[in-house]
Image (cartoon, rainbow, N blue to C red; front, side, top):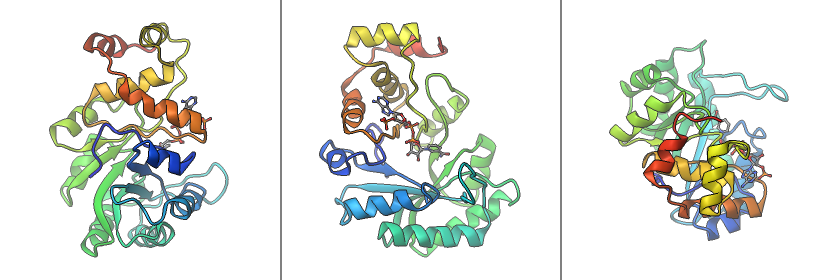
Length: 249
Ligand SMILES: NC(=O)c1ccc[n+]([C@@H]2O[C@H](COP(=O)([O-])OP(=O)(O)OC[C@H]3O[C@@H](n4cnc5c(N)ncnc54)[C@H](OP(=O)(O)O)[C@@H]3O)[C@@H](O)[C@H]2O)c1
C-alpha cells in the first residue's frame, strides 16, 4: 500500500520525480485516453522497486471533454487488461473504480474487480468519486484500500470520508488538491509566515489534515514539481490547520 505523506504527481520530469522521492503515481486509462499510462511505462519502466502505480478504469472517452461511466464487468476486465499491457505490469498495485455507473449495479462492477484480484491482475482495489453508502456496499464484496474523491481547502464534501479512512486505515487520495488561493487572506497570511507559496500551504494543510491523506497534485512543470514536493517539509501548527478549516475566503 502507498504510505500516506509522500506527494505524488503525473510525470513532469519523471526522473526528477523519482529523484525527489515520489513513490506513488496515479493515472487512469481514460487520460489521453491511454497516453498517460503509455508515458509512464515509456519513461519509468523498469520501475524502481518501491514505486507504486495506481490506475483507474470505468470511464470511456468517446470524444474530447466526454467522460461517460462504463461500469459493466466486461468493460472493466478489458480496461484492466489494457492498463496492464500499457503499464508493462503483471499486476497493478492499486486499481481504482473511477466512478460508479448509474446504469450498472455497483455490486456488478466491484465483482469484476474481485475477479481481477483473484486472478492476480490487481493487488488492491480502490474506489473513486463515491459516497459512504457506495463504499459500504463495495466493502461487502472486497476490502477497499483507498478512496479518491475531490477534496481541497474549498471543497469539503468528502470530509466525513476522510475521518472514515482514518478509522479504517484506508488511504484518501484527494484529487484537485491544489487550488489557486492566492487571494484567500488566511492562506496568504500563513504563506507569508512560513515563507511558502499559497499552493504549498494548501498541500501542507492536506498533509496535516489527516495521516490518511495522500495528495496527488499534477503538474507539467519541473519547478512546480519541486515546489509541490517541498511542501512536505512545511509543518503547519494545529492552529494554522484549524484556521483553514471552514474557511474559503
Ligand atoms: N478521480 C477523479 O475523478 C479525478 C479527476 C481529476 C483528477 N484526478 C487525479 O488528480 C491528480 C491530479 O490531477 P491533474 O493533474 O488533472 O490536476 P491538479 O493536480 O488538480 O492540478 C494541476 C494544475 O495545477 C497546476 N499546478 C500544479 N502545481 C503547481 C504549482 N506548484 N504552481 C502553480 N501551478 C501548479 C498545474 O499547472 P502546471 O502544469 O503548469 O504545473 C495544473 O494546471 C491526477 O492523479 C488525477 O488522476 C482524479
